[in-house]
Amino acid sequence: MTELESFEQKLTQLVNLHQQARTENRELRNRVAQLESEKVALAEKMVAAREKIEALIDRIPADEEA
Image (cartoon, rainbow, N blue to C red):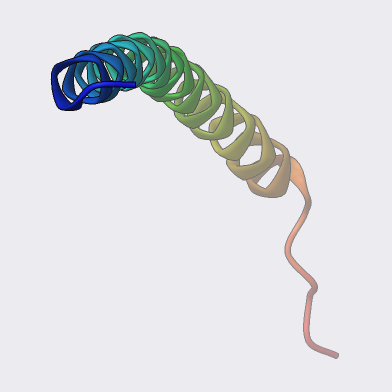
């Protein structure tokens, strides 16, 4: 294998690694966006649950001291 062929092979490997990294990066960005969306939805559910619990607590009669 000549020096030029070796360089060409290494360059091809570098291009392939670069493409794999770009693909992985895109997939990770998509996953982050998905998780952020889920986080917002869960936060909204928590607020709704807290409001329901607070409403239920408000309906409980206060203890009367004897």
